[in-house]
Image 1 (tube, helix red, strand yellow):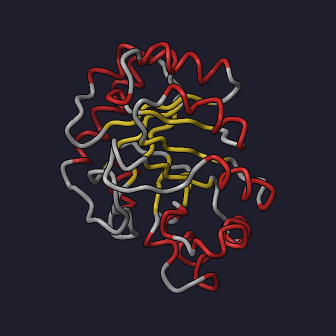
Image 2 (image 1 turned 60 degrees about the vertical axis):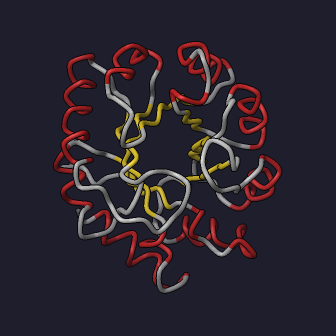
Length: 219
């Protein structure tokens, strides 16, 4: 089994040292940098605007995987793409026309992703699967880092993998929320091939990042 892509969430990083943090993550073996964007409206927190993403872009060559927890989301697609996003993931609830939003992301030259909250049904993926390069399953309710993994997500991973396989889709299946070395293997066994981890990767400081990432890959 291929090791999963490890996508550390910089939501858990030292915000005073963001440039150094993303460089350290690349050196430690991360595959993507996961950027959580929150607007204080769609989710109860406010995080990283496009200017900050642009500022840290020169500090790493890794793909920027930008998760937009923003509503309405369409007005922000171009700004985050121009800031350096390689992947833009959006929630079905964040705009009225998901198919058009995903198409616009691809027109901008980025990979298009769809995010499902714990209570969002899987059916929506089937309707747009031809436009999806990434399916992100939230294993917590979004808005804050440090939450515990919702165990029922494992069944949803299995069902999502089956859906993608039936459709012949090569989209990545990513899991985000409470991912640690204790549950990473179960996520991968269920069908995930990309893991977002914040608190687990950043615990212990930069000297521990490589070991933490290696522990997730070992799943």
